[in-house]
Image (cartoon, rainbow, N blue to C red):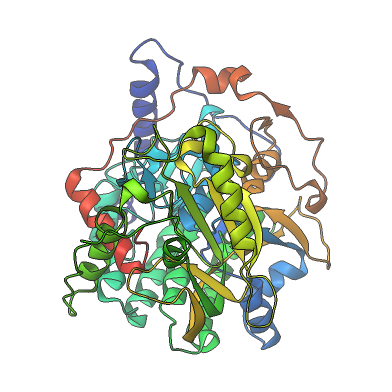
Length: 545
C-alpha cells in the first residue's frame, strides 16, 4: 500500500539528482552536491498564515490550544514584525530569503511592469533571492517544503517540495513532478480556490483538506531523510478574511483549534530533539475606521479623474467581474495621466503605498526626476496633517520606498509608504465617495504583528516576549542548522532567543563557492491560462491591485 501511494526514497533521490545535474551540469556547471551530516538538530518551521498573539493568548487563557501552550512553556516567543505592507507575498518571500522586497523583487501579488501601468502576477520566478531550501540544496542538505506561498512553479531541490498559494491544481506543482499526480489522486488541493470562488469558506472542506495535509506531511516527515522542513497552513488567513459581519473570535477560533491539533501531531512526529518554530507572516486586526487613499489623492489634486471616465458595468451575480472593472477603471480608465502626479498602489491593513507618475518610468509620466522629492515631501506633509475625530493624527509613520527596502529591484516599490493608526484600514476604492469615515461593521484585515514561538534543544526558555522581524527567519534557520548566513541578508540571527549555538558566521554570497557554482533551479513560468485563473483567485480574495 505504501509503495503505491508514495514513491520510494531511492526513486525521489534519483529524480532530484537527475534534475540538479540537468540544471547545473549541462553546460559544465557545478557537480551535484553530496549530502552532508551535521550534529546540529533538525529544524521544523510551521507557518500559520495570519496568526496573531491577540488570538493565541486569548484562546490559551480560555483553556484552548494545548500544543501551542506547551511550545510556549518549553521555549520562548517574540512578536514578529511583518513587511510594510503586511501581505503574504512579500512577507513569506522575505522570511525564506532573509531579504526585503528591494532585493527579492516581490512586494505584492502583482509586480509593476517597466514603462507600463500594467501589472503581472508574481510567481516563484519573481523572487530574485535564494530561498532557504535552495541554499541548503547547494550545501547538500535535504528539505521538505510544503505549502509555502509563492513557490509555484517549484524548483528542483534535494528533498520534496509541494508549492502553496497560487499553485494551479492541474499543474506539476511538486518536486519531484510526479508527486503532484499522487496528491491529486488522494484529493489534495494545493490552494484554496474552491472557497475563494464561492466567497464562503465551507468548514467541512476546510477540515477535510487540513486532515489530508496532516496525513501527507506526517508521512513525509516520517519516511524521508531531512534536515529542514517547512509547512505553511493558509486556511487561517482565508477564514479571517471572510469574518466580515461575524464575531471574529467565534468565527476564527475553531480554525486555531484544528491547527493546534495538527501542530500536536507534527511535534509528536519530529520529537523534542528537533528545533521547532511556529510563526506567521502577519497578524490580523478588526478595523473600525477606513481611509480611502485613492479618493484622498484625487481630492488633494495629486490624481485627476478623466471627465469621460467609463462607467462600471456591474453584474451583481459576479463579484469577480466587479473587481476586475474597478481595477481597470482606476489604473487605465479613471485617471487622466496627463494631470496625475501620484496614484495609489497596494494597501493592506493600516498601511498604504503611493507611486509617482514619473517621467521616463511610467509611460505617461509628468513628474520630472528633479521634482520627485519635492512632490514626495508635499505628500508626506499632507498625510501627516490628516486629523482623526479625536484630534490625533491619522498617519503615524511615513517611509520612502527605496530607503525602506533598498536593492536592485526597488523600482518596483511605491515611492512613498505610510502607516495609519492601528484602528484604521487603508484601501483604494473608486465607488466609495468618502475619504475617511467609520466602517459600517468591523473590517477584518492584516496587521503587522505576527508570531514567533520556538522550542527545542537550541531555543532558549524565557517568559518575557521578545521582538523579531520577518526577514530574521532565514538567517536564524541557517544558523540553527549549523550554516553561515549571507552578509547581504537584511535579517539577523535571533541570538538572544537561542542557546547552545556557536558564534554567528557570515559570508558574502558572491564569495560563497557553493552558491556561486551551484544551479539555482529552473522551473517553467506560468502559462497564460494559469495566469488568468490565478488572477481571478486573487481578485476573489480581495487582492485587486
